[in-house]
Length: 369
Image (cartoon, rainbow, N blue to C red; front, side, top):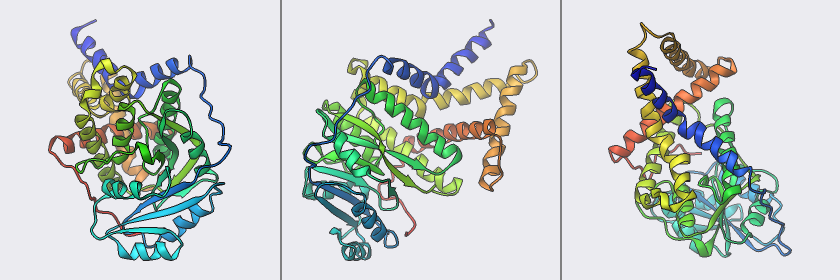
């Protein structure tokens, strides 16, 4: 093999490390572990469902009803933290929720910092105002949170359709394998459960509240488990432009969390270190940068390599598929998958750029709902 071939092979391995090699290795290791089971509590503990809300006048009453009608068998408190939004507070109160009104907007992380200590009960479910809980989701979360050494439970998020939904299915598969070994990083703030006694305040410079909470709990030896039966559904965020803004913000904020928790990258941390590298960091930095380098190498080899021409042509087709899907054109599955992979790599590069330039948005603009 030529030197160029060796370089191309090394870059291809690097590109695949986060999206292929880590998941496959994780799955093989998880197959050696039994599937964890957690029986339902004999006596269901009282539960607080905490909903941080800003500009949610049009949806907050329906969300309160959705929580109350979820069928939780124990005592239930619905607590809405209205983040600088008296109108949402008034509607939530009229719907029967207990309301904590913050006079000024603090952002979601700090709204949670206010809300969790104010919860009346030890078990607290965090959920967003604009999604819908599946039947029995609260009971499933509480049962999982009752396990020994569990500090938090991740629910099952279903968002959008097509490539977007496939991404969330892929993340769920990773979480299912991670918890068979020990714990998962995949805590999503759209639906999760935490113990009030295990909560530590999220720092004021952190926007990715769920990722910080997961790492903080795991660093202290507490498990973050996953309950696939606790389903929450959310509509797609919409256009590619809106998705780009949110995803790059989340990835940039996630890199800041990893920088703040960089001691966990030490291989001596064992499986936790491998998770941070494999599940998050490589996918967000080295993998997409290797992808760019591999594409540049292919562009320089167009005249001499058929493989390079196919590689570049595939990128052109995937790039063309993105706006085609935006206008509703139905495309073959391989092309949809290729477009999603390309988009995720572009998003990772955008998030990396936002991190490097210090673009940390703590109170992002959002449409009124």
